[in-house]
Every structure is written in structure tokens, then in C-alpha cells.
Length: 204
Length: 186
Figure 1 (spheres, chains in turn green, blue):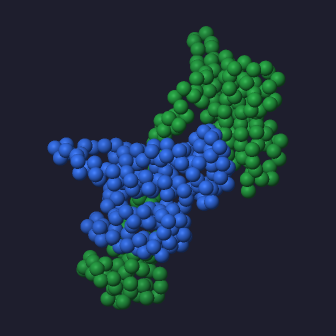
Figure 2 (cartoon, chains in turn brown, purple):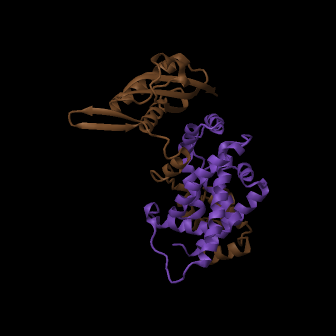
Figure 3 (tube, one colour):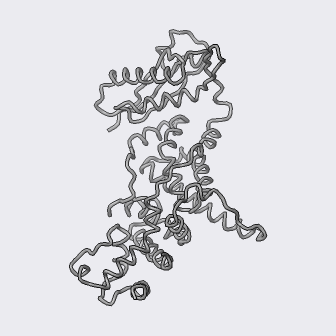
């Protein structure tokens, strides 16, 4: 009986009580199958239609509730193609009596970015290993022109970031340096000889 | 209308900063943008196409297309609006291409089980995705953007380059179509 009524409702657009079925469908789709007004609370046609529409809408609700995450690694290949295959040749090396561990510059970059992004006051952070090439140590204070990188068991990391407006940027820089250096040391064993922090922008 | 599907954590200001740097050729900034929106890209593709395998393909294509199209992004709208448009269009093109490919396909090769089972647990979810993927294009786009992604009518109209009344009408038709399609659902 209920099926018949709601089927008719779908095809004819109005319930026997005169209510517009599209409005009831919208009501259910917007998340409320409960009777909304005095008429609906008393009307068997409206109540049956709302219950039926709610049942039929369940699969769409399941899609709305499903929050899938992109499969791990799915977009890495696309990013690698953009980055270029030979763009990441650097490795740091940790040696001990049991052997050597090589850690790519990209791995250290990712770790540094992740660590910096988690510091309160940072809105977005980018990191890069400054290019290897054996430049003079004094260039370490220069930011972009620094010419150290991952070499042996040492690393220099440059962080470029956007911070929250109103932050004490000097204190923020100190917190980032400490967090990133400690994190890299703990996770990789590499020694961060410098963590350069460049606040590029402040955001509302 | 409220936005039931709106995802928390969007940061348009940070996006704008990253887009500005990416447009200047900063690949690191672009990678960060992709990291921030990767789940959204995948989710829209899955909802538009109904198949994880197709969503995988489209998500990868979008990441490459976005990079090459970055210089064309005027920045007058939110990055997410532009992103939605690119993903939706890519999905529609993917489906059209697939349809013509299917017409050429050898009928002696039946479809085999793909990676669909990877994420599609639950009959309701599968039934929902199937029904949505069968909607006509214009209805499906409006339903995905407004009903599932939580965009306002105005935002969806901007994405689809239509107007609010058009989006509203298409959404109403999509809902009615789905109700009709699902009438045997138990």
C-alpha cells in the first residue's frame, strides 16, 4: 500500500493530501525525514511518503557519508613525472658497524615539511634541501644561495612558509628550527647543521 | 542552503599563497597543493564515475593537467572552485572516452573483477554509486557538487558556468531520478 502511494506520488507529483512530493524528496535529501509541520505530523500520506523516501535515499546517504582517501602512492607517479625523473639524485648516508643507510634528499624534505607544518602558527610550509655542491660555509646565512645540502651525515634544510598574521615571527622561526632539527635527527640520524626559515607571507 | 558535505580544514588563504608560488614555477608549492587536495580530487572522481579504478586514472590525469594549466588560473575565484571544474570536466571526458571505447570493445571479453572491492565495502554504498553514475551528466554534476560535496548553489553554478536556478532544477531532477531508480532498493 505504501509502495503504491509513493509510486503514484513520484509519477503524479502530489500526494492525495495535496502536498508536493518534490518538496518531500528535498526534505529527505536535506537530511530530515521527520515530519516538519503540523500537517505532516497528522497526515498518513506524508508520513508514509517521508518514510519511503528516506528508505530509498539510504544508498545516496551512504555515498555522502563515505569519505574515501586517495590510495597511498596514487599521485606520487604523477608528481614524479612533473618533478622529472633525475631531479632527486642526492642521498645522505648514515654508517655504523652493521652497514650503511642512504636517505634521499626528498625523504628529508618531506619530513621537514611535515614537521614544520605541525608547528602552531604555520599555515603552509614548503621545504627543500639546498643544492649540494660544496659551497663556502659562510653562505649558510644567505638563504637561497646556500650551497650545502645532504652530504655524508649532514644536512641543511630550507623551510619557506606562510604564517598566521599576528605571530611573533622570530619566536616562530626558533620553534620551527628546534622542531625540524630534533625531528630529522631522531628520524634519520642525519645531523641538521642548519635549518633556514624563510617567512614568505603572513595570512589572515 | 546549508552545506552538509562541506569539508572542514579548507584554507583558501594558504591555497592562494601556494598557487602564487606554483604559478611562479615552484614545484614544491604545487606538490603541497596536491597533498592538501588529493583526497578531494579522488573523492569527486569516485563519486562522478562510481569506480575506484576510473577514479585512480582521473586523479592522476588531473594532477598533471593542473600543473600544466596552473599558469591559466587567474586567481579570481577560489582554487577549490577551479579544481572542482577541472576534476568534473575530466571525469565527463573520461566517461565519454570510455563509452566510445566500450563500443569498440570485444564482446567476447566479459568484464573482470577490478579493484572496486578495494574501497567499496557495503551494499548501500555500491548501490548509491551505481545509481549516481547512471544519472544524466548534468544531473550527476549538480548532485555531486551540491548534495555530496556540499557546495552552495552559487558555488556549483560557478563551477558549471551556469546559474543557480539551473543548478537547483538539475538537482531536483537528479533527486527525483534517483528516487525512481532506487524504488526496488531493499
